[in-house]
Image 1: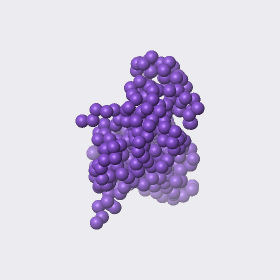
Image 2 (image 1 turned 135 degrees about the horizontal axis):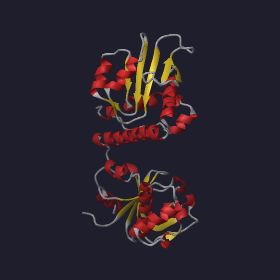
Image 3 (image 1 turned 45 degrees about the vertical axis):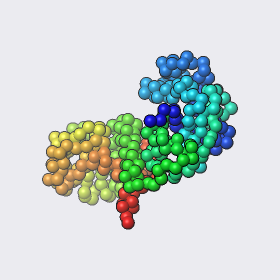
Image 4 (image 1 turned 90 degrees about the vertical axis):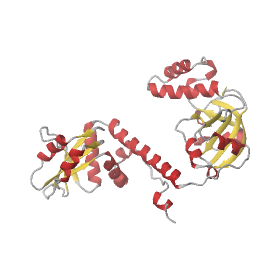
Length: 334
C-alpha cells in the first residue's frame, strides 16, 4: 500500500508549458486573496469562499473551498504531484518543493502557487487507461490513489504494465463520455429553460428535421403543445400533434391515451419527454401505428443528428462539440 501523498492537478491551458519550465503548480480563485490570511480550517475556507462568491451554491462552495484548503494546508513539501498537460499531452510528475505562496504575477489569474521540482515528463500513451481515467478527474485538485503504484513506478523510471488500450477499458471510457454528455443535455433541457421554452425547443428540432411547426396557445386540447406538418400552410397530411413534458419521471399510459384521444383521422401523435415511458404506455404505442413516443434517450439521438442545423440560441443552450471515442466495433475486429 502506498503511503506517500500523490496529488493530481489540472491547470488552464493558458499556462502553456510554463508550469514545467518554471517549476510551479497554480490555482485560480484570485478574488479570495492570500490563503494564508484564512484560518486553517475547512469551515473558515467555506466562509471565506462564500463571502467572496455570495451567489455560489452550497455544493460549489464545499468543493471549491475544499480544493483551496487542501492546496494551502494539506499539501506538504515532498508530496508527489501529477500534472497532465493538455498542451503537449504529457504527464508531468514531480515533487512539491515549497510552501504555499500568493503570486499575482502568474498567468490566467491563478495566484495560488507552490514550487515544484519536476522529475519526469512522460507521454500519456505510456500509461494504462485506468491511470489516465483517474487523472482525468473533474476536480481541479485531487488525491491519486487507485493507480498510485503506476505513477510512482513512472517517477522512478521503473517498468510498469504496458499502457495498451484493451477493449474493456476503451469501451468503458467511451461509455463514460457518452453518459456524461447525455446527463448534461438532459439537465440543460430540464433546468435551462421553462416548460414553454422547452416546447419551442422541440418545435425548432422538428423544423430542423424538415417540418413546419408552431407552438399552440390553446388549453383543453388533449395536451397538444405543437402542430407540425410537411407543407408550409399545413394543408397536406399528415398533421402531427405533439405533446411535450419537461419531466424526467416516467410517463404512464393515461397521459399517452389522452394525447391519442386528441388525434383525428389521418393525423399522427408524438409525445416527447426527457424521462421515459411505462411498459403499459409502450404497449399502447405498439397498438397505435399513428402514435410515437420519444423518450429522453431518443430525443438525445435526434439532437445529435440535427445539431448542426440548430439556431445559435439553441447551440448556446446545448454547447456541444464533435469528438471521437473508441468504437467497440473497431476494437473487436481481427
